[in-house]
Amino acid sequence: MTKMKETEADKAVKGKALENAGAALLAVVVGLEELAERMAELKTQAKAKLDAAKSEGFDPKAIRALIRERAKTETQIAAADELALVVKTYAEAVELAEELE
Image 1: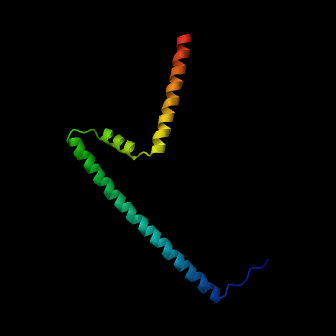
Image 2 (image 1 turned 45 degrees about the vertical axis):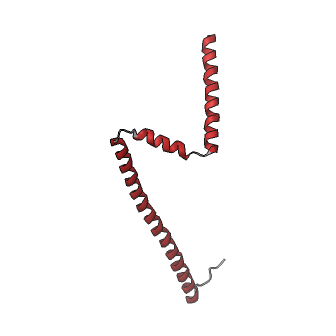
Image 3 (image 1 turned 90 degrees about the vertical axis):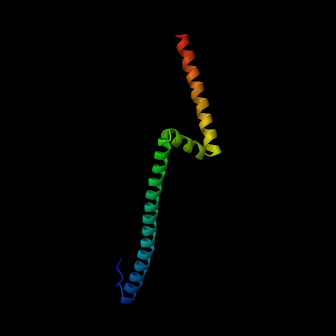
């Protein structure tokens, strides 16, 4: 199969398409960079709040755990409860097996 010769019109269309795609990509990249900057600022603010809570006698590790717990959905809580029940059942089975030895 022979390759068709690219005309000046083809080159112009291709150039315009690349220019448009490049502009769209640049907008995405700039937007993501701005979000990264805002995220860094928020992380700094969160650290400052945790440091302040620590200076007031609160445990930052416990605060982070509380935040994670409060963020869980009902589905996540149900799955965790189900897993805890299975682990408890397994532990009881192992304990029983050890007693029988």
